[in-house]
Image (cartoon, rainbow, N blue to C red; front, side):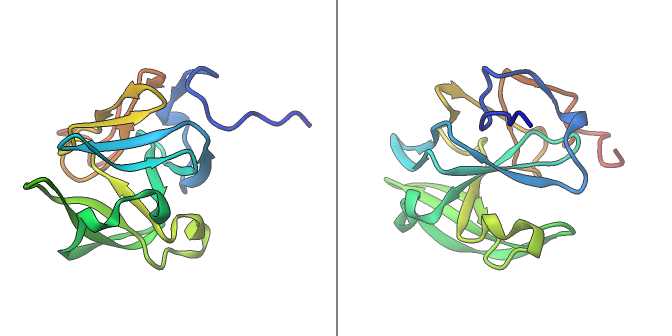
Amino acid sequence: MVRQPAYSPAYRKEAVRDYPRPPRCEPVRLRLRVVLAGVAIADTRRGIRVLETNHPPVYYFPADDVLTGHLSAATGTSFCEWKGIAHYFDVEVAGRRAGRAAWSYPSPAPGFAAIAGHFAFYAGPMDACFVGEEAVRPQPGTFYGGWITDHLIGPFKGGPGTAGW
């Protein structure tokens, strides 16, 4: 059997409607970065992306590749039927604060054990987030944290009128 290489946007276009439900995790070998106030607060080549139908991928960074001193626990949690309970973090660098801009699943559901000890970031509040050398665009809306790149084909869930699909 021929195996596909680890995810690469140069490999092919991806239609998010073809992503699985339930979602799945897969490794990302491209460099992933999150920048706030000129500081790369997260930078890895050991990322994991979660793919879910109609959503751009959410990228997770191993804690060892995150400057966790810039994260502080925020109030509240949320529940994902697939991953479990998410905990949120404020991100602060050089006096700039992005409230509840990062999250993690400390004890994810069994199918998502790969993202335990990892952090994800909303792209919107950051100065920039990158997949490879491409700056991403945030998923529409304020709830979901997917990162949109040029190799993705929408439409994307998250904007007005998309809650039911």
